[in-house]
Length: 237
Image (cartoon, rainbow, N blue to C red):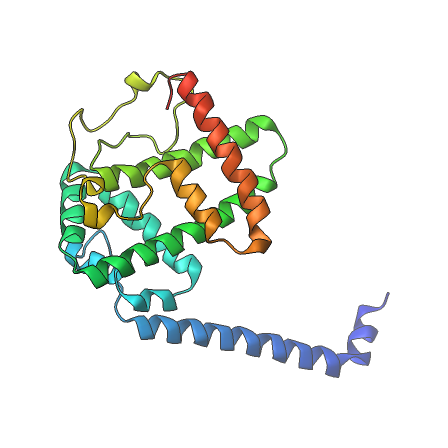
């Protein structure tokens, strides 16, 4: 095939197609920038005061952000504030001081971002073929949920971000044996309507997921719950 002749024969159509593609990219990039500008300054969890981070997470403007941006921000926030007892205490104390309407919005924002992330997990999980691959994938996801649980319950946080299958639970390193901060589940105002176990969290996600993604998510959730039971029998969860 003579590509040069083919190009010159259809050059007008090719040029128009390229221009349209470039224009689409520019438009999409412009929309993304407009969304970011509408939200305003985004506080960095690693440098901003916890009050600023919590205020941002409890603002309805966060819904303007693209889903991927929200998920990355939430992941970074959880990783930072679950990494030490002092940070967890500061974060949970800032949450406990929110007025009711802000607290409600915070729950909605966090739930929406987390649900979107789990839907992505279910898509990735559905592409895995072997039993070993699926078990390893679930273990990583459970490790992330336990990081979130550490923030919510003020629990010591294990140094690994995944379930340690090759070691006994008692041998995993942690920040200490005592509660590392306020337990949000003990506050009726904060705990209302918020599941804290991995199984409870996933069930809530299914209820709010679009029908198109529900079957795949249900399979993932059922396998997660089965894996939890298996790990409990092995005394590794």
